[in-house]
Length: 225
Image (cartoon, rainbow, N blue to C red):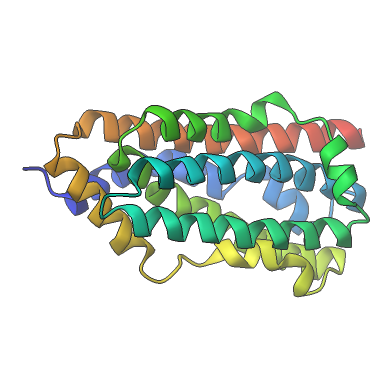
């Protein structure tokens, strides 16, 4: 039987060029150089508000689907992390002068939501192994970008530690996350999950991650031109 750690290592190697494009995205350079006006940060907050609202529902559905399996703890922990991120995102928005009513009224950019829509699809139709692998492979790039954003927002835009807690939460992989994800993947493989579908889930989610950054960058640049 295929081993989860070997499969994830193979996926990471195959997706390394895509991950590098995410990590070196020009949106991050624009922030680090202070080229985006502060009000343009509201776009990021608005997009994440819609994304988190969807992801909370998706992960809650995963808890319901797999609540009677050993994967329960992994998805419960993921749900708790998303819930904490929600509160931290509202703090970031308040620092930009946005109320939750403002966030609800924000009209999202379509390209920024392929990621969260695919998470919803996986929550409905994907195996536990597909979901865990996609989350695990994606987290490193997302976390690295969040770390860079946190530093740029403090140094270039004057935000405080409390204001950027949303980004700091994702900047480091939570303790036990990788081991938990690998256990879910291994259990899924033992129950017949197809390695090809696991690879596909990780590849698509990572590609949709890049599309998110592309969309936010293009929308931010267009609004400042």
